[in-house]
Figure 1 (tube, rainbow, N blue to C red):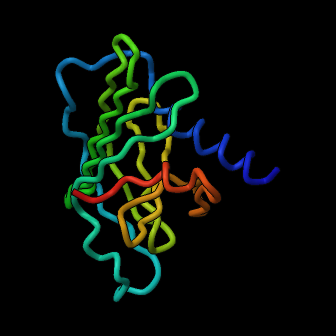
Figure 2: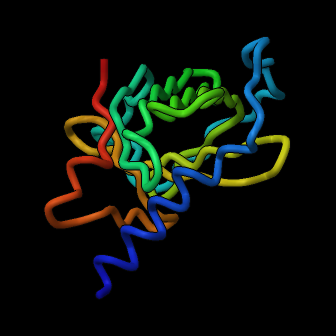
Length: 147
């Protein structure tokens, strides 16, 4: 039962970033803040900057083709394409910070909404604020791989 609840929460987080509007002009640069790293400074995740891609599960479409770009200036760009849905491409930009040493907290400036990805060996996995990720058969579908 806990696994189903976690899966529901993670799916809700993935979909929550969508404000129902397609952004035609791309992302505007937001105010740059400093990255807050906690924990051991010799952490193996020091080089997490880059582009991550994958297809997240979607309850009412063929999946959410996702591209997440983590920049070294504490900004991110997130493109979510809802496969098979008309006007289903959404772009969002904002700032991020590292919490608990291995969790990327994305913040959408317009809404203040937060989304979390846990840094793992093969990329990043959609998670909750504590770093808990989906488990079981569907766990691999919540991972974006580094490109």
